[in-house]
Image 1 (cartoon, one colour):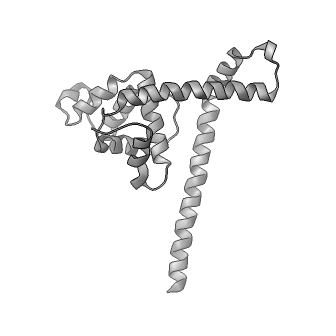
Image 2: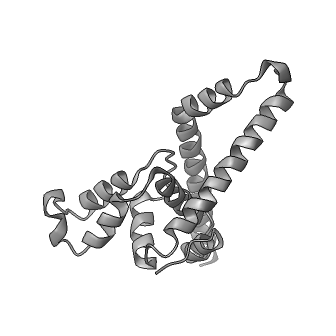
Image 3: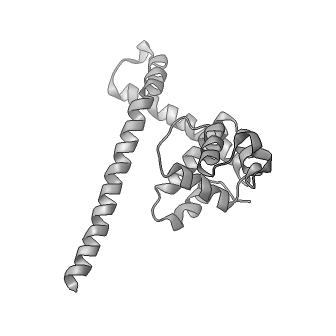
Length: 174
């Protein structure tokens, strides 16, 4: 009997480790695919007068991240109270922790329609019409804040922590 318990525990540990490696692979792949964005950004923000050292690149990256965080904070405030816990759970289930730098409100709506087999032409008749309309109305920064919150919540630990993590980011639920 002890062998079974140890075997089950080892299987769970192996699954978690595999999940961690898979998540890291997804993150690296997403960064590889999106490298054109950050390379373009750093290229446009290379100031010869500052030099070309790693400290300059690090400083540029830190400033870019500070601006990104400021924009995300503003957008989080704008989407706060826009979605219910059930809607956030549906969106998180749809995304499944996937790292994606460019998911728009339209991408979310189209994915939900596909997953729930909702004909886009009959959107009004769907029980999810309100959610889909709100997704379609999101600005780029609001979509980025939604993607960021789902990603951070999903990877925060057990799913029970998901909603607490999203709220810690400043997003409340309706």
